[in-house]
Length: 592
Image (cartoon, rainbow, N blue to C red; front, side):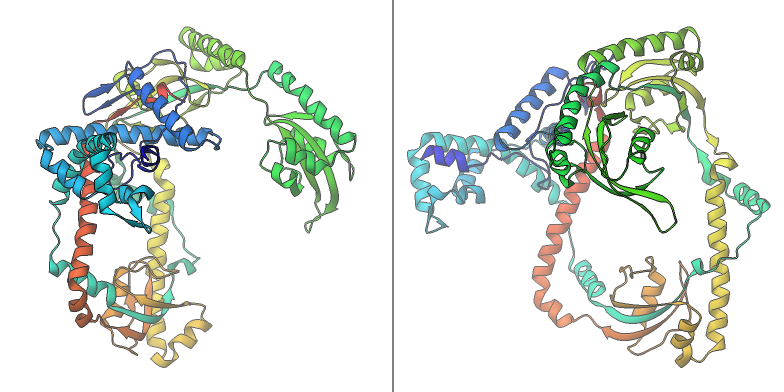
């Protein structure tokens, strides 16, 4: 009996809005030269590697136990790591709030929970009669089985503080009858309409001068004011298979090649052996012309005759065996072939990865000794530069999520070099602070395209308004739709338009929506000058809100609105709680 109960009773993990689940996986520890001494800091509480690692190991075991047949991919490990992180953040922040609010659990609270078991307990087969929860069975087992009773008591004592916390927070949200009534009216006051849309984008002959761009820039310069910012110059030392790594895979690809030459069906071999995305389709790449594939692959493929199979070739993706099924000219007169391939990916060995650390250190020392440009030239690497980033940035262009580098840049001087940093994909990064500026304005060259589009859109809108006004005065109302079709203006039919609805093919325009809602059925509006263009609308049908129905459903609607308001408030409360906690996430420095 108890085994069945254990199997079916799923342990409750406190969550916010049912979003966090404590089922996780373990990642690998990265090797970097300087680490933060802690994995995370959440509301001033530091989480060190051993503690977080234990959480990951436990979670990984839980996931394996719950998904014994599932392959653990990198994506799943990342997902599990993120779920672990979210649960840990919630646990700490909730715990702090429980203490702050002096929330306690009494014996009476536990007894009330025992009297009213939740749905997962009610659904246990051993507690049901004819597929319905049997309270007498539940009560008997509760009295006779001390282990089960202890389990429930511990569970409730663990979970009740969080339930009480959530109830306190949700109680702060209040909804009034007037608010519910207004929302009901807004949602049920709608029209069906035919709309002539005078689209500014149909204006094509707009000219913009350099003088206009310069003047607009000067007039709106405060829009381009920026906080203090930094930039990095950097070298990426990429982790790639070495010649020895590639050679290790050569024997296997040769074996597959020999199987194909000996008569094994190529598509069958691709399904069995190919590691490329086309493998399940027999390696089929369809038809392609020159310039679509990497050079080594393309040279081999286009050198084959119809039915030919190329010897294994090596590209940046691994070893390939290529078979050409057809050769033809396409509609543009270009040569194109239909081919399939078998891909055997090559992976860097542990030795290669370890050697890369040594190379990264050599590059780093050369950067210190000479310069980043000279070091790159000596080792045949490229130097790149990031876009500017700000002190509160989470990401750096080209480098991804690198809060450690953001902090380093704002704490050090131009020319300071961060020690080699191992990235999640195994690459190493050597970065030098290349620029630091205080409050500043973006250069005109940086924002010129944006300004040009803004001026262009303004001119198009002005011109389309002139054309729309000429249209309105040139024709009788009964001619509008026929003439609009002749002049190639869009005619859009929309149904159930409310004040907040975005009409298909149009951006949201409350001026348009409100004007139509103010019109009567079968009424043709005057020219509407909206935010995104001009319109003339014919209201085909009007649907008024049924206030008698509202009165009948009022209590239910208020209850639903209250639940929504409480959940929205709870979610926003947690977002605000996280923002105020100054959370520092250093997982990327410890886990891949």
